[in-house]
Image 1: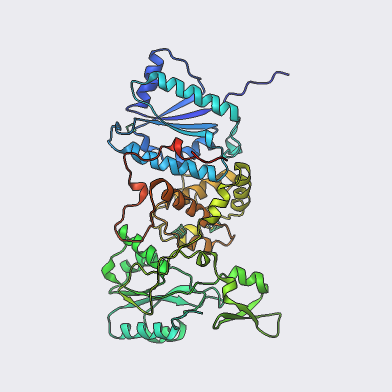
Image 2: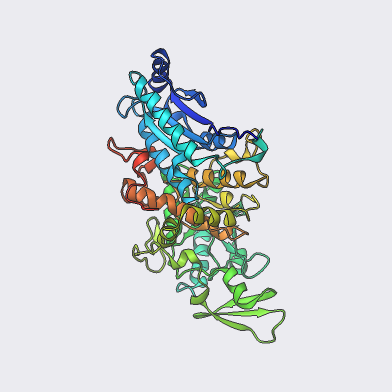
Length: 144
Length: 330
Ligand code: SF4
Ligand code: SF4
Ligand code: FES
């Protein structure tokens, strides 16, 4: 019997102004990162409500990463400062409930950092691959 | 036993009603049993004289009632506030949830409230009546001939054992004395959990949260939860007002409920008090409070009117999400 290689599903929320453009640049430069990273474009990193992160896990994500402009560079001036606090508290709470802390991440990626985008995704995918499937925040009804 | 007498509260309330200084009094009255004291609105002296209750079971925090009552009632409302209630009162004012002019707040001291679950553990079901006396509760049950005496101290509610403050932070008038902000051990249990392994924490919460029946009492009672339209009422959310279908939905509800009050929760303890399943909701709230204190500096919601809640604030050099676990070895 052939064992299927485990490939994690990663959801990456990317803000329109920096990180999404960074992902574009990575593509234009033909930098490799796994195709299992599904990008969801959001107007600003602070558009991401904690519910989005949980929902992503529910619908099958094994890891969720949130990318936005570097602090100080947010298109809306301060959005990512709020994101930073929210996510710090949310991630700490997930850890408190016993959910692996490596499954969530925040990374600041500018429009010029195509290489950083690809490297971040490669690293995150490797980390989540090592962890294996998301069991602690899964919803069996959403499994195929 | 409470230091301030029921009679002095009733007397004050009747005097203010009769002088037309207030048009209603928010107080406590007996529910079906002696121990399920519920909030009530009084508008006449006779009712107050007969039904007003003030004893070791008056845990209910009224501040949230002011949101609705100040809108629907002409004239002022008199309300009695224990020290912990005054924090919720301030937090609601900070969020402009009611008109301060329409409330006459009387601060009353509190010696701690008892937990009926602990009393039932001590003397079983079938409680017919309970009398609050000096330092003891006399519990009459259906099965014993003589009343059982329980020392009040031994059945104090968890939140009262970890009381953060005996100081009234808001009032128009004080009856009796106000106290001090206390050194509380309220974060001990949070730290105990943090010291466990992730597997142990997961098992702990799985066990606690799986008992939730989604009655929403914790949300409904919370003075920080005052949205008129709640995410958990949204029929498109899949989790509206129904029992959790699985452990994911349990966690979704509990994480989001606690997150929505993060930075605004005053740690009044009402959510844990009303939970029929004895889920330690205060641990989730205190986790957020403790983290906020550690990451962004000490902050007590409701300590003063107008303070900026930590989640609607920031500094340029806040901790990164990747740095929060630094220095933790588990
Ligand atoms: S979450 Fe609980 S402790 Fe916090 S304000 Fe609401 S009812 Fe009180
Ligand atoms: S009060 Fe308790 S049982 Fe009811 S929804 Fe809240 S946690 Fe669940
Ligand atoms: S627009 Fe990129 S983080 Fe706000």
